[in-house]
Image: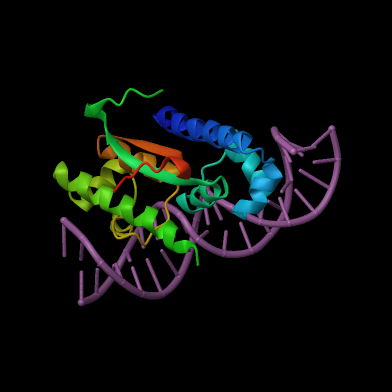
Length: 82
Length: 82
DNA sequence: CTGTAGACTCGTGTCGACC
DNA sequence: GGGTCGACACGAGTCTACA
């Protein structure tokens, strides 16, 4: 089960969203409305129990006043993030 | 229609995958097999006609020997990426 | 305001065939 | 090897309701 590395991505993204939302002082409800997604889905996203498509992700990012950045970084580079 | 900015993300990702795949000399078929996704779906991904979930994206990235990086960059920062 | 659960819709992802 | 089409399965995303 290499799903662990995948959960890292989900979990990191969840924290990212939660932090960005708190920074601009929005509630999950308000963010959900701004991104035109379901309120309960934002809850799932922020706890890493959802597997969103990039379309939803882009909407969430836009609602957070941010831009969605998706990139394939080469392992050889070792960007050293955690 | 704010779908344009969303298509940018899809299109950029498509080019990213195509380039990374060419770099390691894999065919779409081989990549599809390595990532355990459908061969025709890789074709759709590389031409930006698909809207993948981050799970699929992570599998593709892993098969390309890369790591999937998803982040919410603040517009104010203007990271100036191309 | 947030987490969870059940039921539901529809689009993501699959598969086979053809070009 | 790669693009496209039609049909399909199942999971992403919605909605209601309760803690």
